[in-house]
Image 1 (cartoon, rainbow over the protein chains, first blue to last red):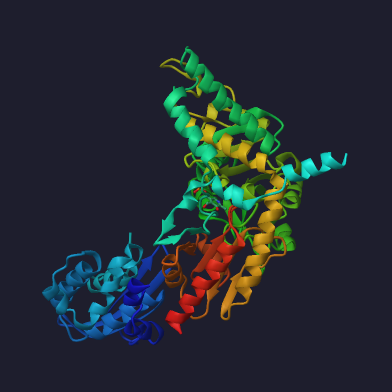
Image 2 (cartoon, chains in turn yellow, orange; image 1 turned 90 degrees about the vertical axis):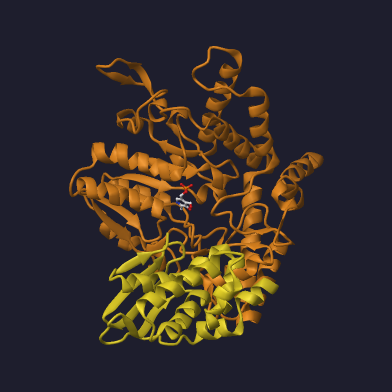
Length: 149
Length: 417
Ligand SMILES: Cc1ncc(COP(=O)(O)O)c(C=O)c1O
């Protein structure tokens, strides 16, 4: 029950139920569809990129509390950041979700996103947390669709 | 007479506590809790009888089959071939040679698509599937379509998860050459009227393949009574080992179908100019088969028979009814699949939590269920759900298992509400 509480923290449940930036913008410059074929979760990330900076971001989709919360928090976190910054954040986020001994200082930079570190205890759920990020990277790279393996 | 009847009665009274002792997995814990296993539709647990037989063979009887001119190879070959008789008897085929061993049901369907499909179907011939098929009974036909241009038609189901027979009949015509359909849905538990489907299909000249993966575990199967041309299932869902599947096909079809794979065991003679095929069923069993797994499957079937097949089914029905009642009492729970004729599968959603969150939370209480699309995405779309939780029953499940499922679902409620 403890690691469950750790996974399903208030913040996550809140973002899962009331996702932020959950809409379809009119004029995205980039967008990509992310699929998790294992569970059928699907989401679309929309970006407005201007000179390498993500000026606006939104998403829609369906999924579990973890994937929706992760997407919602991601959109809040990356707004205004450059592509390079986002790639670095992704790497750290991925490390936090998958590596046991990921180093504290790295994680601290992830600020609010740290609440998602609970997925580490649930290997089958890591992809739920990372799906929005993979989709985001695909959108930045100009790819239309990404599938978690 | 009286005492005789009591004996009969005693012999066939299903005792679940005793049965559970045959399954060593139930001594195990999951996340610190005694295991509640509700995922038999994915794969069943194995009784000691099966596990021991496998170990015994490797320890004292093992050799390749059909090859060795020595005692233990001969003996094991006889045992291996003997399983054909056990299965032939279990599903009541006319001939033992109508049983082909494959790796699993998926391979059995692919065998029919590759061999029967490419040899006897042609462009614009029609194949009818249903909306509730497992991907294993969709994708091989799509591959065949892409190769030779057959047309796939899909028979719809209603909101309860039953095939709509008059819609199915409308699809039948003289272009229909094959109907490939489940006997029982792995997601909804619905049992399809396969005898009627077969009769109607054959009346327009179509062959009928039945995917019996789920039905074989929960229903009596009599292929002659159904009248189908092909019937497929996997051993691992029938309390047998993984790695062995079965294709039943009527003898005259097996005779004219070309081999599926080439190699040893499936030939009668080979020169570099040409080879001739072995007799059926061996024509379809290239290479060293899953010897030990096949024998293990035979043991599993004998085990089920010793418990009394009718009694197992009656018992499973009581647990299904109990579970249905208990689940329906939960607020916000929607049962997906409410066919009048159904068995052993309960798919559901909760309106306050996603299927994956539910599965993770109840896993920590030791309850194993499946969550997701269950390899039936078209069916999920039809039922307007992205994912469901599926609790599926085996002969070892008890009312207590259901109570533990229900109380673990209350934990989900606690976390989410
Ligand atoms: C209805 C149905 N068809 C086909 C299959 C495929 O079985 P296997 O993976 O053993 O080949 C399954 C099992 O998941 C099933 O439930």
